[in-house]
Amino acid sequence: MRKIDFNEYKKELLEAGIPESEIYDFQDNPVSSFYQRYFDWCVDNINEYSQIFEVKPSYFYFWDSHIINARAGKGRNVYRIKFSKSYLEALYKKLGRKGQFFDKTDWVAFHNLQKITPDSLEFLMFQASTIFTFYHEFAHIVQYKDKDFTMSEHPSNDKFSFEKHIFEYDADLNGSQFVSVYFQQFFQEQIPRKDQTPNNYKRLMYLGISSIVITQLLFLYGGIYPFQPDKVNTDFYTKRHSHPHTYVRAKYIIEHYVGVAKANGVQIDFGDTTRNVTVICNEFFKDSGIFRDFIKGFQDNFDEINRYSLELYLGQKQNHSCIKHKIGLFGFKS
Ligand SMILES: [Zn+2]
Image (cartoon, rainbow, N blue to C red; front, side, top):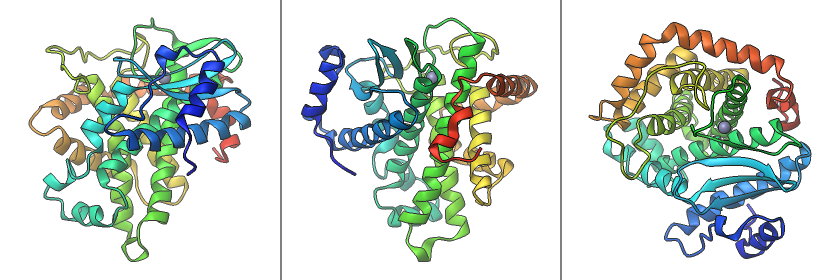
């Protein structure tokens, strides 16, 4: 991928009216290579798809902020996706460092995969999470085409609106679909032929979706923040707050991920995937009780989760601003 010259790109951002105080210059950061890689990928993708979807001009940059979130917005005739510095660094710390998770497990099959993966399995988790974010935010740009707006990936202080919940649903499915496709391509292109076994394929697919669920849970339980709050409110709700509840999001994100994989001939199903996501998340949140708590909340609200998820699905179907109705432009069939 082409390396983007940050200094040159920054000039364009400033000319577009983006305040200098918002733009984080990552060039001296100790993990600048992490930043640069994601930056190159995002700028490349936003350039390509903003043409195709006619949402121009669109920019991507790292946001110099302590807020841990990503946002999409439009103002002064410019579309933008900003990913906060604190978010990138929190994810890097939690997910991205080679060996920090898999090497501590006794999962022999994953140890073997670790040896043949070009970067590391942890970097793949980081990629899954950040690819999800980018395509989540990109969906918002398309949904609000030609309007001024601002939307976040993770819950913010916005009040409830059913249309916004539908847009979050639509954006989540868009993110999920791209991670599913990324992991399929990764298996086919980056794993040596002799290791391209059906079981390795499944393992990688489970890893991709688990990374998204882990990120969602880090937010729900406050684990993403440097100072974890003492009390977190995980009470279930449907029509409240800026985003659908994490239980609902987790359900439809997994379902869509599996649906996209199956449509492309990958031999996984929903039951099998949730079982494996459970194993990976349990290990990740080991001893913290987070995952047990999550499963309990999920089971206690199972019917409502399904009902609301269906309501969002129907809402998306009827709302023609949703990116779902245009995904043919990405080259996807359905
Ligand atoms: Zn969002």
